[in-house]
Image (cartoon, rainbow, N blue to C red; front, side, top):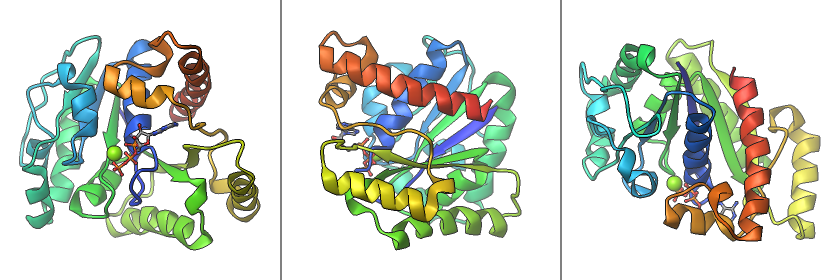
Length: 247
Ligand SMILES: Nc1ncnc2c1ncn2[C@@H]1O[C@H](COP(=O)(O)OP(=O)(O)OP(=O)(O)O)[C@@H](O)[C@H]1O
Ligand SMILES: [Mg+2]
């Protein structure tokens, strides 16, 4: 099972939008998918509520939690609830429990997508420890070399601290990209110059269809409006690239 963690401590950069679309896409191409919502805001849970399985995300931080296989359309959600915030206040042993519980479930799923909260608490660290792949959506308006370095340093620091050397950083993925904004385009160019090898080849354009998709609880490419169809084509190209890299 490949475990793809969508992570950035910054809020509102498109993590959840990407996580749910990646889960939908993987299920559509025939993978058995588990998605974990580690954010107590429960946005991914609201969108994917009909896929909720037997185990909540908070339970996966406890010893020997078992995730029943199956799921509607090949997709199972470990939903967020308010008890998730207790995890961050609890024992650090929970960090390794998540990894162990996912390892125990790995025979039943091809892919696990983890949506993380906009903070670097115990839950996000646990997700990074469990990851086989990490992808970080970024907002170009906020770009600063320091912030980008911080994301990489967090990834590398967690890998080192927990003795992981086998996880792959897929890259920084420019998201909510306003392609008409000269400032955002300049930020992207600067980012490519300064840290090009850490930038994912592709980006997600800011389009109206995404908010509608999440509210309609359906992938943007399934919506009728032309702008949503356009967004669907774009994000599917990015998702196909992610899936190819993950293998
Ligand atoms: N490509 C996009 N185009 C237009 N709107 C988008 C796009 N991606 C996300 N949004 C909107 O931006 C807002 C933030 O997106 P999202 O919830 O995915 O970010 P997040 O990083 O998960 O936020 P948080 O850190 O609060 O969990 C949402 O209202 C979402 O609908
Ligand atoms: Mg989110």
